[in-house]
Image (cartoon, rainbow, N blue to C red; front, side):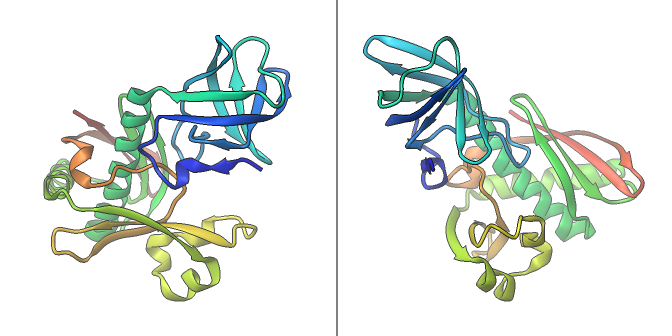
Length: 239
């Protein structure tokens, strides 16, 4: 099983690892900072290098373990490689992912609208929420609230917690633990502090996050559309 180092530190861009399996166009590493696609967040890209050779990491997927899809014949089992992430892509996706947390919390606070889905891209993101309709005024208010939270530049932290303890002690409306497979018994809890020093958002999440909200940058809510009966889709971008 690959040691998922990206869960511990979202800031690392270069690391060393050993190939434990090589098959068709994929390799498994004993440890990785490459984020596999999941939770609406696209996979990282980058390179693996060893002994003067280099392979482009074209995709990363998690099944029974983390598979790195590479260009060309993959490095052999036992090869020690240096992994290097596409830093600009990781930074962008991390900012969007953390902004999505803020948007989910604002919509729940202001409109009692739970998040039902989301998808992040490198130039915008969208979030689906349980709501009949958002007005133009609603969206303007949401944008102002998001940017106030960004300007407050408050800490974003994470820690692990036993699932049974989390289910007993944390707010299920915010953490959405019930959406996770029963096989996951230890949860990674992400907290975002509000301007008042209290926890503004707390949720179970395995994505990458900035260390403080100020790193997200200015948020522009670009529009909305109906995503289905009783669901609204909100689109936003970061400058």
